[in-house]
Image (cartoon, rainbow, N blue to C red; front, side, top):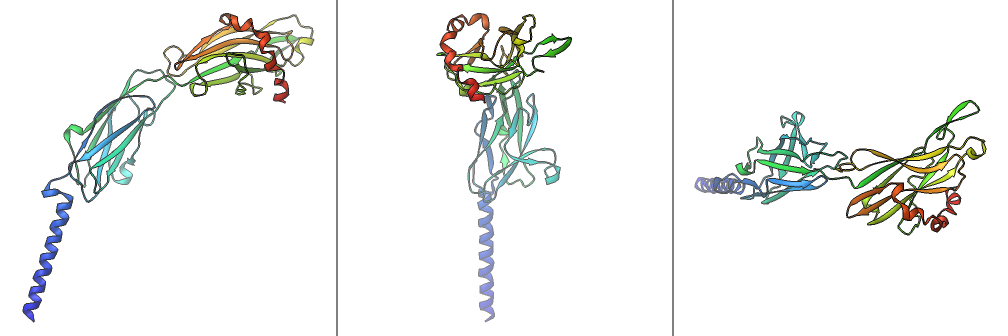
Length: 325
C-alpha cells in the first residue's frame, strides 16, 4: 500500500512540474521575453488626422502586456494639439509621472492604439511631438529599442469655415438726443443667394441681432458663387423722422482660422442703405466664391454682374417678411 501511495505522489509531482513548465513556456517561448515593435515610428499628418500606431510582438504572451507612453518633447501641446487615446497614467494609479498606458492583449501578436491630432483656428508652423514607449514594472514584454520613440509632425490646416460679421450700426441725433441704429433695433437680415439668385434659406444671420454673424462651412457649400444680400426688415420709422439723409454703410469682417491669407480678421465696407431706405429694401453687399476648398471674397465694387440683375431677385424677397413673422 505504501508503495502505491509513493507511486501516486511521484506521478502527481511529475504532472505539477510539467504544468508549471507549460505555463512558463506559454508566457515566454523558450524563456524569451516578448519583444514589441512599432510598424512605423515617424508620421507626418495634417491637423485633425488620426495617427494609428500598430505594434507587433514576436511571440504571443498568455498574459496582457502593459506599456507606458510619455510625451517627452515637441512644440505640440498635449490635449490642445493632440490627444493620446489611451488610459491616463499618474501617481494616483501607481504609474509614476503623468502619461498614458496601453495594454497589449494576451494571446495576440498585433495591437493598435491611436493619437488624434486636433484642428484649431490658429495659423501655426509645423508642430511636432515625441512620445516614448517603455516597458512597465511587470516586465512581461520588452520594447524594441528602435521603436522606443514615436515622432509625429503636424501640418497646419485652414479651418473649413469662413466666419463673417455684418455690422451696420451708426449713431445719429434726433431732437437733441443721440441714438444708434442697434439701439432702436434697426433690423437687417443677411441672405445667401446662389449664382442664379435663388435664396438658399440660410437663416443663420437673420436673428434680429446687431451685428449679425454668418459661418460658411465648406461642407455645406458646393463650388460656385454665392451672393450676400443685406435686407432691411425693419427701419423703425427712421425714414419718417425728417432727418437730413445720411448713409448707412455695411462693415463686413471675415476670417478663416489657420488660413495664411484669411487668418486675421479683416474688414471692408460695402455701400448699403441710407436713412431714407424703407422696409424690404435690399442690396447685394458682397460675394463669396468657393472653389476646391478655397474661399474668395469679393467686395461690393466687384459684384457688378449681381448689381445689374437685382430686378431678377426681387421675387426672393416678396415672402421674406411673411416667413420671418
